[in-house]
Amino acid sequence: MATLYTNVSTQQLFPANPAQRLEGNTVTGRDEILTATYTTSGSEATNDVIAVAVIPAGARLLVDQWRVAGVALGGTSVVIASMGTTAANANELSTTSIAVTAASNSAVTPIAGLPEWSAPLAANTTIYAKVTHSGAPTANRALYFRIEYTLP
Image 1 (cartoon, rainbow, N blue to C red):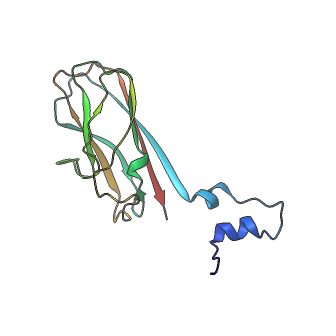
Image 2: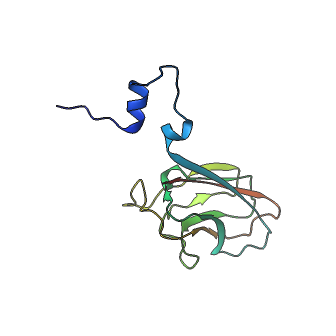
Image 3: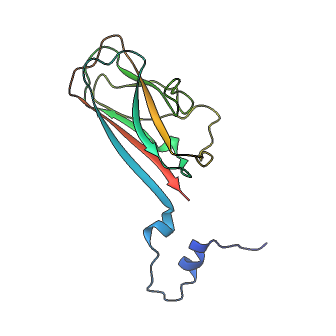
């Protein structure tokens, strides 16, 4: 049985200069973490979508690393119902409701069958989050989105 090495393990196990360290991005890849903030207006209608951010072409989405946090948005049964890449549906990445009426910090659950690493995005792609509620959130409250992806 042979042991095969990546460019990272080769440098870690057999460095030309033992004191030399790898750059952080060499070890971790080009993972990017984007944090976006949405401030509520208080007039959000159920099934409105929030355009969270534009992810660059070539990126692979790491949906299982995403989080949504709310600072007690108020209202009644305010949730991020789903997330996706089309404003019309916003549901092909996650359909797990995340309650944000009270203070929260929750993981986004990818839809069943979504691979851990998505295929590279063919073009710059907007991520959307669908809001539902039975009573609009309070105005001027913050909703935070943590979106992780990796670049080639």
